[in-house]
Length: 387
Ligand SMILES: Nc1nc2c(ncn2[C@@H]2O[C@H](COP(=O)(O)OP(=O)(O)OP(=O)(O)O)[C@@H](O)[C@H]2O)c(=O)[nH]1
Ligand SMILES: [Mg+2]
Image (cartoon, rainbow, N blue to C red):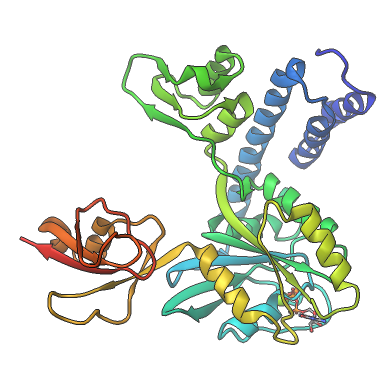
């Protein structure tokens, strides 16, 4: 037992010992984690609590899959260049936004839980189709089994990015706290960069660590984390200074890492200005916040712009020698290379690739000759030359 733990911590620990269900255990462990003093002497304890939480999360997921047992799935088939989940508490204006931004014909009403199934809609913007999915309202405890909560959160997990919808006529900080807690419980990391730790499993040879000097903590603890993940032979590369908790996160395969923005809706409502300022103060460093009014159709073009940005898509135009660029452009993920484009067009283009000429932001001069690994940018024009 580490020294100097608080009375609250001990109470939470007692609660944990008495907990029966997985949900109760998770709630107690969360309290333990929140009340343990943060210093070097409690590092191992914090790590242990986190690992236990991760195990329980996996158990919860397993339970859910068994229970579902072939029942109807509410998963939404991906269409278009990217899928963005619209997530928020009930009655915040998710359906109103979906109606305003897409072709979806969804009900809007002044009471909670109007939408009970995920509803997709297509947003057409800058020659690209982006799929928005309204996730029915989340409430405290959703991830721990309340209502359809776990299924809804798996729709969120599965999306490419997340748009958090906040109602500016209500306390915005409380709304964020509920949502972020449920995301955390569901293993969804929002706007957090995955620590740069890589594992390459090997057939034999035990554990080899590269960059061990980057580990801020006990290397024997890292060995334990690896054992817990059933990794017995691997090359671990630590590319930046990390704490033990960060290593545990990077190796935890039950986590997903997603980009997110906040849509601050009902900007027309009384009190919305003060609430907007509170939201910016509390979360402006971590999230882009876009104030809008779905009802009055205010700032919706700006919102489309931000959602397009969030989707992480670039459009690339292809052309044949001596001809104009072809329309429409090809949507690709940000960071895509000339080879990714070649593969998208036709596998023969990829197989017989020689070089490409590129016009646009990714090159220094128009028509520059580049190789297969060249990274493209939004609006580039590409002419692929094959054998
Ligand atoms: N003042 C104001 N009211 C809005 C705005 N957007 C939506 N509303 C109102 O908020 C209520 C809920 O809107 P919905 O779009 O149904 O909200 P929702 O988040 O889809 O609700 P659930 O599906 O029940 O979770 C309705 O009465 C809307 O008219 C807005 O920008 N300003
Ligand atoms: Mg709705």
